[in-house]
Every structure is written in C-alpha cells, then in structure tokens.
Length: 292
Image (cartoon, rainbow, N blue to C red; front, side, top):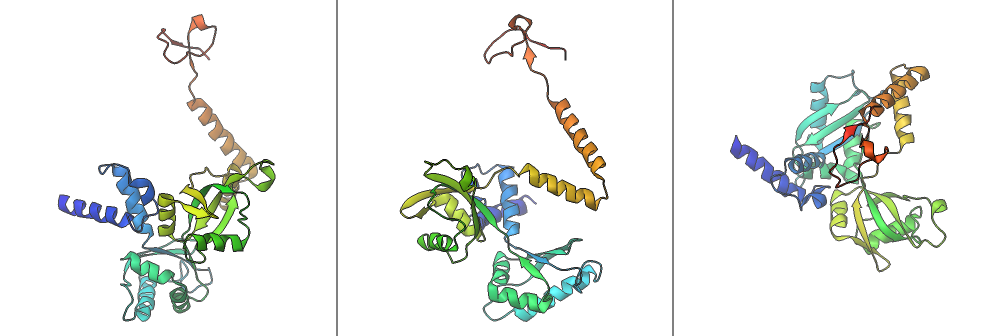
C-alpha cells in the first residue's frame, strides 16, 4: 500500500510540471505538504476531463438513458474516432448531472487534449449528439502593470500580444481591465487586467517566466480576486427561485446569516485603566473582557 501511494504521489508531482495550472505556484513548497499534493492531484484530474453539455431535448439527457447506456454510447463514439496515430481514448469515469452537464474523465491527459482539438471536437459532437456542446476549461490570470495603451476589447491587440509571446492564436479568449477606464486616474500609465486563457501550459509558463508587450516586461499571477457580492446575491436569488422561496424568506435567511456572523465576532480585550481603549501589541497588563 505504501509503495502504491508513493508511486501515485510521484506521478502527480511529475504531471504538474507539464499539465498542472497551479504548478507554477506549487514548485517552491515542501515535498511533504499534503495540501500541495491534493491540489496537484485535482489539477491533474482536470487535465483529463471534458465537460459536455446536453440539452433537455437530447436523447442522452438525464432520465432518458441509463448510466450504462450513456457510457456505451460514448465508448462507441470514441472507438469510431480512433485512428492509427491517435492517443489512447479510454474512459476512466463518466458523471452526469441533472442540468445536463456530463463530465467525461479520460485515462490519459493526451486523450482529453486530442478531443479538445477543433476538428476532433466537431466529429465527436456530431457522432454523440449534434445539439451538444463542449465547454472548454479556462484559466484566468492577472496581467500586472500593463500599459493603458493596451486595448483588451480590441481583438487585434489580443492577437498581437499572443504573437509577441509566441502563443497560439486564440489562446486569449477574453480580457478586461480590473478597474474600468472611467475609474482610472488621468495621469495613470499602467493598470492590471484579467485575461482568460484556454491553455493551462501557457498560463503556467506565463506565471513562471512572465510575458512582454511592446518591449515591456509584464508579470502574471493567478487570479485570486474575491467574487463580486452582487454576483453572489444573484446566484443566491436564482437558487431561492429554484427552491420556491419568496423574497421575505430570502431576507430572513440573509438576516439570520448576518446575525450569526456578528455573534462570532468577539469584543476586543480592554483594560480598566485604559479608559476603554484597546490594548496595544506588546503590553503585558492583566486584561479582562469588557461586559457587552
């Protein structure tokens, strides 16, 4: 058992050097960090997965076929796509959700990459279900201190950025300024923008080595921005409609969550000789908790 675990850990670490989106952020961490291994394993699994969206009218939609029938259909399609020089197209697992999203996990990352190619993707969808779509996994990164002369809404600027860094055309699927142009200062020269890439290796190398645009060095980092509260509220409201909750019930849930959050916050430690001012760091005075 220990030998199998050691072998699996070694395979995960080796695969992250080539396929892992987070590998650039994990290379400096210790070898015994279990969280690092878990994150690397998740990212390695993602490189083998393909997300196929099936419409409710599809003959393969949830409830219309059994799981075994769905797997047999996918295997038949993959067998028809196999040619002499194609990589291994074997399935490890198939997971279908109620909304029609179907996750196909391949045995090898090369097989998933082959199915993501434009020509192969069209043949796979045509044989599986012409109304289905394959959702490509994207990798958002932050481009730091890029000159504001760059126009992320201009497709020519995006293609020029790809060309200068020897990326494949279409690697950048979208880009936008973190702070909109209307909120930028008049004398501002550089700003940050978020770019969405479809290639994990490109994102990985960009985080490691940085990129250039018009002889300007630009550093990349993984996007760790917090979600927009308004967007979270819209998601919460959509879930409430699905659960048949009214606006009053939703307000009560939000108020209850806010009260619980306030109760978890502890009052600051105070000393009676400080006239109610919080203790400063380094003070060694006996402290008592002020009664609320």
